[in-house]
Length: 234
Image (cartoon, rainbow, N blue to C red; front, side, top):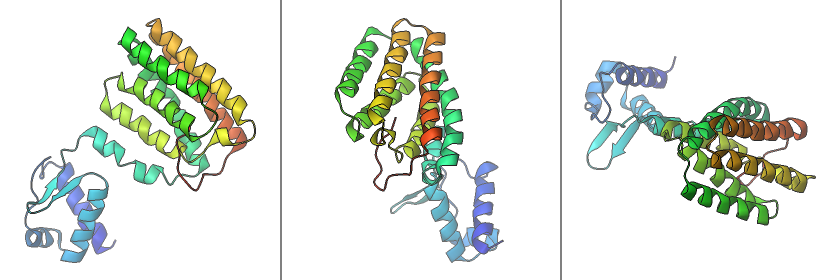
């Protein structure tokens, strides 16, 4: 184990054990080096690594602090590693996404209002009017994110954003047959919205799961390569 690993594990333990609380300022660097038996270089690298994970905040002129450790912020940091996943890893995530999107849709149905119906309907009108490509894909992501937000769970919403962050690199609608896939996706969106309008949690859950499962099937069959320039995807 390297000195950086020692420093990282030591700081991780101090935070996980509650010795360092959310929002608490770190002890002086010299004190931490003595405690963890590392030099300043490895300690600073460990701090940088934890910062990339959203665990630590460096405040100019004030020092280094444990972040609030809010679930949504911690989960959001997963995008750093999820964005590296090849197609097989992404397909595994689709199975998880199917379950969570289903749950989010059910929660949204129980809180759905006429104003929500109008807003989501407007998004779908734009999606259906747009040709296959990045603008329609961006709207697709907005539609799903809007439903997730209605679940009133920031951690859940952020986790779905993380899953979609890797899907963004795989533009199914740019492949041969993309127009047909988009048409089927548009139909799936309408099924979801219909169940939401009926305030039908079970129906919304089923429609959302079916919609994600179809996209997953397309991904398995076509196994697209990630685009060089990230863009949103269904």
